[in-house]
Image 1 (cartoon, one colour):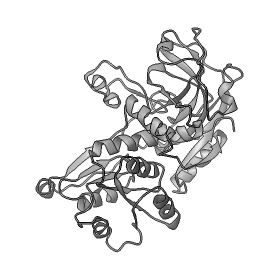
Image 2 (cartoon, rainbow, N blue to C red):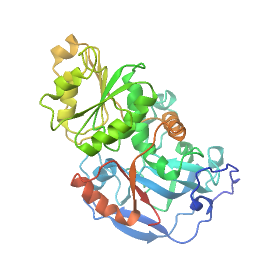
Image 3 (cartoon, helix red, strand yellow):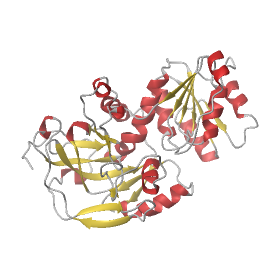
Image 4 (cartoon, one colour):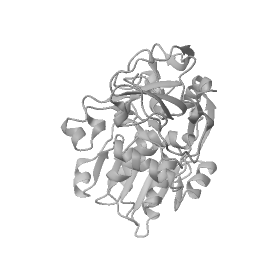
Length: 372
């Protein structure tokens, strides 16, 4: 590992572990060897030999995303590496650098490991800011090992700098859930004052989508179910909450939530069920846009061609943000306009988290403390 200068950055919201820049002991990992698991917590040697452009990150917190569960179950129409250390919402500090990596980060920098671990940065997609669509992109916790470990090797040129004012546990969910919905709202191409409906508004992605939308000046119609999620969505700035389980006509209720009754200008679908997508095509107004965000493995969007044309509606897929989107999403969170709502558990509890996710028991986001 090449020596590197230590960052002089002061940390306003500092975890004491951020100053522990030595690489000592074993690497604690959550790993599975076959699709479907089981996930095992093991101690393995730390990878200290770094290639050019690589950085060793001491992960302190990491969020848990439904994508991590999909990778473990193997229920996507894509293959992930095996064995695999999952995770792609890692927040920690740089503790060592490979040759050439110091042009991007320094030892001691507070950084985030995102879903897009690296891309070629030279193809037509990368050159136009569409790094997630790069044919050579690698994904953390999917095609390369991710953040469910104490020491993660990552690519320095794709690490995100976490602002000093943002605690690492708050930052972790922004690195996937936050940047994903922030990018989706950009894809909607709204202007301040327009309405956006958010199915799944009380979940891990949805509650962040509400806040980014409000920060941008959009008016939010939150769609979810239950008194707790209603209270959360309204406290975050949603003007209207519609419970899809108690509504007698969800489409009519959503349209009625807009002053002219034509429906919202956009729907950013953070839910993963087919019904959420098909309903959105019915309640967005003419010239509206459906932004597909959730990633169910085997769900089709059924759109009537005649009325898609007649009503001039758009269907847009929004995968995840690029490096600049991630930095913007983190900066907005650091300003206090977006705050993640999560429960902290230990890395040792990841197998139970997966079980609870499969049973639909997880509300909001889970953030894992790697040392627990």
